[in-house]
Length: 107
Image 1 (cartoon, rainbow, N blue to C red):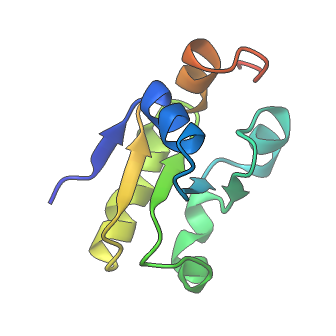
Image 2 (cartoon, one colour):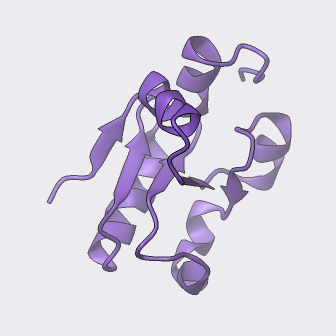
Image 3 (cartoon, rainbow, N blue to C red):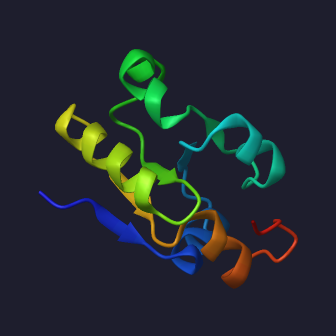
């Protein structure tokens, strides 16, 4: 199975429509402090295996990183671990800043 790719605009629409989406940010803490999407939860990529129990496999999860590479790895891992509704934010926080919310800092 292939992880769904979600554009920044599609994610924004999902949130605006009131869909409950768990935003999982897998970047490092210093990146998260510099730029993040409101209500996203930070679990750095290397901590995902140990912290899997903090995530709900029934929840709609969108994984976020800087440009979409680390989040793709995390999304693949989650899917292999039994999470069925996982999507990767295509282009990451950078795309979010460019396409949706320019107040989010770019780096």
